[in-house]
Amino acid sequence: MPTIGIDLGTTNSCVATYRNGRVEIIANDRGNRVTPSYVSFNDEERLVGEAAKDEATSNCENTLCEIKRLIGRTYDDPIVQSDMQLWGFDVINDDNKPKIPVVYTNKRMIFCPEQISAIVLEEMKITAEAFLDETVTDAVITVPAYFNDAQRKATRDAGKIAGLNVIGMINEPTAAAVAYGLDRQSKEERNVLIFDLGGGTFDVTIVKITDRQFYVKATGGDTHLGGEDFDNKLVNHFIEELKQQHNKDISKNKKAINRLRLACEDAKRKLSSSTKAKVQVDALHDGIDFRSNITRARFEDINHGYFKRILETVKKTLKDSGLIKEDIDEVVLVGGSTRVPKIREMLEKFFDYMELKKTINPDEAVAHGAAAYAEFISNNNDHNLKDFVLEDVTPLSIGIEILGRDMQVVIPRNTKTPTRRWHDVRTAHPEQTEMGVRIFEGERALTKDNHFLGEFTLSGIPVAPRGQGEADICLDINSSGVLHVFAVEKITGKSSELKIDMGKGRLLPNEIKRMIREAEVFRTNDEELKKRSKAMNLLEDLAYNIKEKIGKSKTSKLKSESMMGQVTEMLRWLDINQKEPVEMSVLDKKKEELEKICDQLSKN
Ligand code: AMP
Image (cartoon, rainbow, N blue to C red; front, side, top):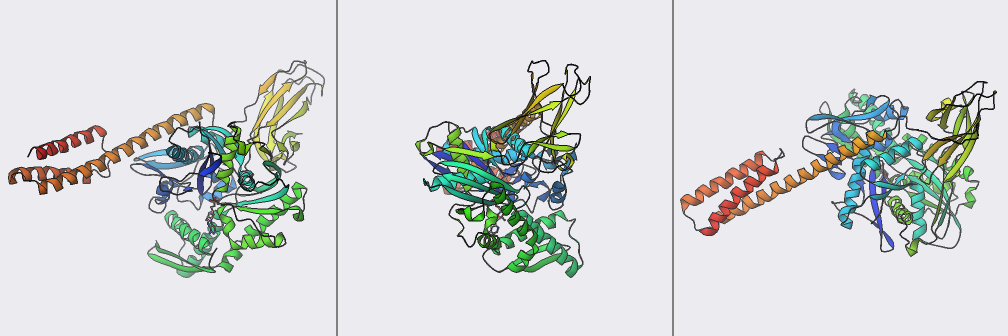
């Protein structure tokens, strides 16, 4: 059974598979090797990829993008709050989980981010199945290295909803390092810095590569920094310009903002090769045809703060790796936003004018590495992957709250994974039979400043003097960077293993099951719609064919007029029903009617 690697990007996604000793990037049905991570709903159908992106301006309320920015986050997260302002679709609060309402087939439906990401993942699965001509379920999905536990688990849940068996998750820059390393195998040991700046996330990873062995030394980044932030800065710049020049505030007009954003992204891309770009949007707001320009220098100035943050992250990651910049042998660029000239210039300068490696395709490298990793873990013993070793690290420290306030780190960040660490906890009072344990993720000294992962209560502790009631908490991180927690109660010497549910804010198993069922219904509906649309097209072809034959036939005038009348009526009916999905049984009857005319024609 084949395996696939999926790069589930904020802006674009890409799928690859490993076949005949090499990785193949799989093109979608439009022939493109990357697919926009867009999903759009309308009165008749659900669209994914390019078709969905095409709806971004005409149906912005129901066209969803950048959902990766929501995944694993809470509604009150300031990042969610600020992103929402610039999206054409709505985000609502459901028990502090962000959810997205849309209108689909004239019904209001509410989706959680995992379901939308699942639709994109499913599209990638279908793309792979069409290419490989067989069912594909086993997949490796990539995540930004800096994704926290909640974001990783939510991504894995999205995979399940999409009908995938997620055999592993790999950090995006690590996957790019694998692609880079496998491409130019060399016995020589090299320290490679992968600089991955995509649409929504930024990762820096330093990997020691020797032949087919990959040892991540440190990783750093920002799960909310990428090309879309540059676009948003431009949008805000032009909102201000409109205020000044036309005395109009378009900030509440979601449709206008959406259109302006597309124009800004376009201008940003142009600025990578020119020093000036136009931003033009017809009838943007209150009949104003917006016309403006932006220079590369102005763009760089507007985004200066982001560029500074990017370089600081590079420096911090270097420090964490225990290396100095002179130890770095190669800097590899990954992600669409590494095309921004200022970013390249800044990196070149920092690394003393070392030539940056642009040889791997920044849009495909992540999926490429993920496909090789999928092949490796599915044990298909390909000789090109023999001796393959991959050792990654944890991006964030994980710890336990002590004294109701302080963070006691159990697994420091940049610890090699998989890893398992034990931590001893003791009762604070005599007669204490229960102990509450709270787990956090992050680098701050106080737990209130870190990310809360979950809590549990150890109960049934035998009565013992203060400090003598004792339990061991185990924090276990697997090779996908996903955390499992359990506790062993030691007081009576009996070790009871408790599985801790860290699911707060996450989908519960029965919710995932329900969503899998819903996704199947969507899939069936989509297939049915495609079948009907194909049947309608065939019917139309047949009708035109018959029309042509009637014109050429030698049948009596009366008969041909009657037949032509029937065909014209059929074409009119097809025209009227073009938008409405017609039942297959009705289409079958219509086809029979046309076939009867065909029969009559052939008898004459
Ligand atoms: P990725 O997530 O790697 O697919 O990167 C997507 C991001 O790269 C988007 O924000 C794009 O606008 C950005 N991007 C793609 N091409 C260019 C370019 N030529 N110049 C600047 N940014 C680009």
